[in-house]
Image (tube, rainbow over all chains, first blue to last red; front, side, top):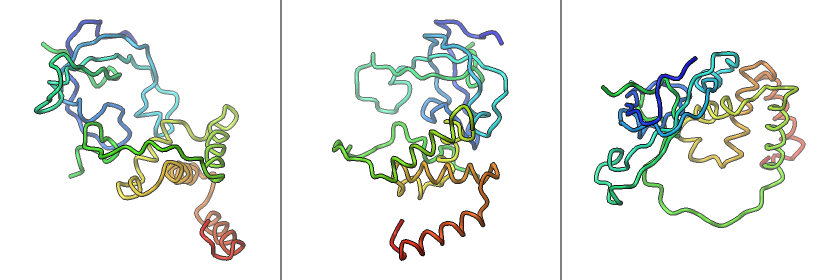
Length: 95
Length: 108
């Protein structure tokens, strides 16, 4: 599987709320950030969590979000950010 | 309609004060750690980290709040072993009753 995104690409996290084991934190869903690192390819924990160990690997990226974009009324510095590792299937291209 | 945010996914919520004091683990807690390590080793591969997390998340909000760290672990491991047919409910129930009787009804 080849990586769809490159460092510097703006991305949007899917606003999806499935049941089951999900590693994409609730607070970043529906938010936009920027790819800052390609982390490698790993099996999908959403499948591994249910004992399906042999699925395909999937690219994972580190995505940087501005804290101002994540929280209403954020009172810290406007430069504050957080980086979250997110699997490719949770990310959409920002057009 | 289910909740959009699952209970364990609490990043960003008010957490209250953090208790910084160290505490020694009870012998049973060390035992739980050892059980989990053995079930996850290369020979058995019965409980992966992803499965353990999924099982802990599925304990429900009430248990998630009330149980301490290793209570969550042993509850989650038990449920995985039941799912995988390593243990049966009946076998587990009988063994627990036997141990309780041996302990003279003291809390395990």
